[in-house]
Amino acid sequence: MPLSPLRLRLLVASLLTVSFLGALDHTVVSTSLATIAGDLGALEQMGWVVVSYTLASTVLLPVLGKLGDIVGPRAVFLSSLVLFLIASLACGFAPNMGLLIVARVFQGMSSAGLQLMSQTIIAQVTSPRARPKYMAIIGAAFPVAILIGPLLGGIIADNWGWQWVFWVNLPVGVAALVFALVAIPSIPRASAPGFDVLGSVTFTAALVALVLGVSWVADPELLTSALSAFGIALAAFALFFWAEVRAANPVVPLHIFKNRTVAAGTALSAIIGVGLFSITAYLPTYVQMAYSTTATVSGLVPIATVMGMLVSNLLTGFLASRSGRYRVYPIVGTALGAVGLLIMSMLPVGLPLWAPMVVMFAVGLGTGSFMSLIVAVVQSAAPKNATGAVTASVNIVRQVGSTVTTAIIGGVIGAGVAAMLPIGFDAASLTPQLVHGSDAAFQATVAQIYRDVFAPIFIGLSAAYAVGFVAALLLPPGRLSNETGSIPVVVEPQNEPAPRA
Image 1: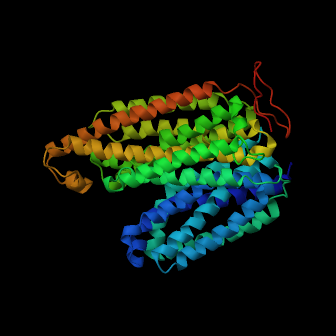
Image 2: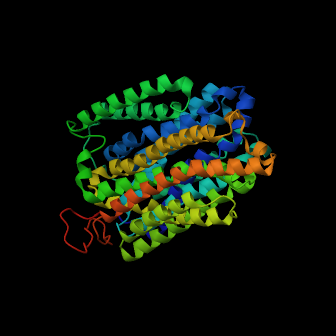
């Protein structure tokens, strides 16, 4: 469904804007949480402002993906954008924490629709060859949001009030809505009518239980609840797979994973969440403790990581669109990520800060080289009537992988540091300020402890990238076609079809 150059530019601008708004709401609230909780008098519920948004934006991905295939991505996108604006307005007017959390749930739901349908719409209106370039542009919203979100949230909360953290979405979102109404074409539905209710309910229940379980498992007081959640998740997943193999129009068409490109691409997407997104939250703490830096300076390492991701995401997207070749980027990217994280595990304490910055920049560079590209490749390999569903699958394994691995890493750090501290020292009281105010010998001890605790974590994440390297090698070699609806030229004979439109 080719568009005129002007209309395509308007479309990309609109999709990039709303993708940025959705990604920003993951990060912009973090620096305002204490202010929000204090104003609403609910400090104990502060974490749910983030968890409710993340949970809602994760569990609804497969449902929204399939809905986009059935009714068309334009309708789902516009509905999600309107709901996002209403929810943003409600967040700012929330008189108590309970209503704010409810509004954040709706904001997360609509954000999932915006992110997912942006990628689906691009897949429907561009050729496989052009797709990586536009996916890279839209995908740049996430790393940019990571870079500026916390700073922007702090500035807004300090000068305008925390309500404007949410209300700032309104003027930008309305402008994006106007552009979207003009630029997004009417895309025919790709899938037959009929919604897989049982599959949707069981998959949503399984993901909710899984995410809650990994969120609770590190808290001894919630261990029983976590184990119960894991049991519910296991049962729900079993029922989901039973339902999907029998459904006439499944919410997640499992048969498409028989295609080697789809299976390998989905695995690569999971590696991004497991191997990098999970560790970024802990890098500032690691740097503060192992390198004795301030909180502000510790942010330089994750910033370097994100900058590497942003640069390579844009570069490989444009290169893949120019040549049509895609396989080399995930192969080189996963290798770079594996080597970089292995080097991080071997860095001794006492090095200048530029050392981990350079290494993590390389890890970000490797990850960004296939972060958005792999979505375009998998879309091109899937049947047209499953574009939304397969796009949702690629995104959900990334988010769930990040959520689960983040919880595991947090538990390992907490237990490891507590076990290695000198006898009689309370791990709960160990703060960067306390360490930096102590004598040099204690600072050196804590630095070595954090280095020893994080070393096996970096090795494990390096192993995850090594698995991704194998998955990248399994991608069938080929070239993305420059014509919508055609099949790419395959370099050598394959038993399975290479990506197509």
